[in-house]
Length: 427
Image (cartoon, rainbow, N blue to C red; front, side, top):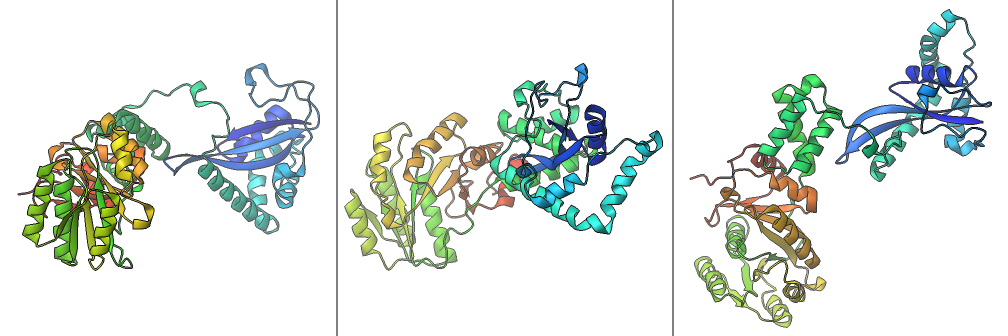
């Protein structure tokens, strides 16, 4: 038995392809719908039809396919090819007995359509659709390649249209790196019509939806069921950890409770300890200095009646793995401390991603982005999400305490990316 796989946009065109290549006695073994995807979002779908014939066929030289079986070989088809008995019965009923008159051959697509609408086959058709839908979902989760099985590198790359070039340039203007901008544009080519691509409002709508789907935020930083919240800020030097910690404390006082204790393990810089003490005096909060993991545990026990404990840490070079390992000794899992990685939006992209990777050994829970008021474009927010998949908890847009601290929300982040300059501090 000779087996071949055909790919077409619908069943009618697929049947014609099978008849032309395998002849009128071909037998359909299985059908499935293939849907391409990027970023976990569905794209256009095509139909894959597996057909067979008992004897060899003479394939035209111009229609050679990578799926053609070698001459003289045969394949035994097991019922499992069709996945279950219902699908096998359906496929057997679709045997292509196409030895008809020319007029009947022209009417074949209409007859197939009428047959699908008949009451007798309706139940089987519904079951088939359900199986195909479930299979498509499984393939998307497993990132299965399209049914053509031809490596993407072997396919000729299409020249982007002027509309796609315009969309890519818009993404680059937002500050999104070239690789991510190209990927998002390629997905737009698969999901939008040319008319929609040429419409600036449709482009804007598409980008807003895509960014919202890709961005992740920590919406519940202070869960109600937790008796005491413990948050530590870690990150490279000079990103604004101490100022951000003071903003979080001031915001918690104004919206929830003044029951807060501040702890610092930043003994490398005397100025940092003094700065935190000044904030503590202004907000009438206790400030504790610890030098070892044991002292940290003691201070947590001392302030067990507080609603929030905020822990400041010394800035560490991402390349100083010994210091990062030393810092990890303070955050044992039994202490239940949330670790927020603080990064500056003004950091160069390669250095920022390097810091994300090296600090990940601490078990980071969320990301805080500071100094967005110093950037003209914030596409970096999207690049961080695609690269690291860590949710955002806060962003800061100035030095004022506590005004210049915003809890991360998807719509807010999308607006900041799509409105260059919006991150500037409002006077």
